[in-house]
Image (tube, rainbow, N blue to C red):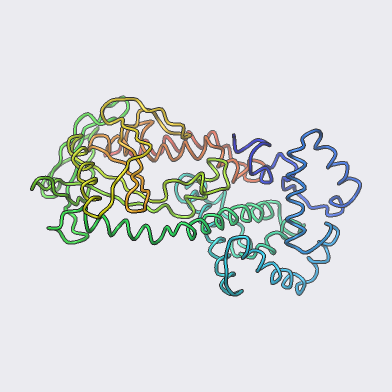
Length: 436
């Protein structure tokens, strides 16, 4: 289901739908005959009507009113706004399963607001970085974390259309952030992440090395001019890298490697461990057109590893299994896909490429479920640099092709041509990846 049609879970955000933020807010229309006619204009779409009623009821419940005609009275009285916000705190706390005093509830809401802002900033500073000034948030919205105040801004005609849209957008993103944080508390993901790190340090990595002791190496690679895929790769030392003059069509990539022991032999491995940040989880919910993090965010915990060869990849898998046994746990692998050996993998993920070689699986071990992505040196360099495969390019495609950019920055408000920007950004990242 696409993010940008009226069957979307996020219908209330669509500018071409019944909840779009217009240039002005004629409050009278909301409770006049015009409002009734507008409701009839929803036609024979019972789902849209139900969504409208649900949104209306949520607004009335949060603001403690019975009709839209009462909103002007709230807007004109600061004491009433503060009282409404105070009344809403315990309801919001119960919504997200927070059992605490008002100051702690406000801290949670501030965290949700910061996550909502970080969603926008994460796009401003990378995928949409050349257009940062176009999509920068209105100051008054960025500094507001109170859901009641944000909601009232939607009905306040003193605020520009862009500010009112951003207030609505922030409410939607805060709601997703709250659902994610609640899920994290329920699954105890912070403790599991700590346990995962402990497991790796205690049982997986070589005991002859201190924790965090990383050996600096470089991958010196040559790349095909047609698509910049890796043609050859050689591991060289830091000393060799300093003497090397990189030519056109070559790359020099730094990797800091740990090691694990296999039959007395130390096998080097580059590892990056990931706990997906809340803003990234919000974006994933949007891409998947979902509000429930339990069904859409299954890769909260995991690592990506790079080894010299497919043979070393197999040895690491066996070592991982033995490490689990030493930790008094079996290890089972789920959702396995392996394209390192030349087989084809067709991903359902928007923006991904079937050319991407990797071994990917989820390992269930010690009460945890962690995602593992394993590369050889060559496949890792393709993941970094190859056209249509490189992660930077993939990130652009999945954000644009899923409709997230148009969803968060609609054309009628931000005046940006997202199709043109997507192609420009792909060209930019390709040029950056291929420069020496």
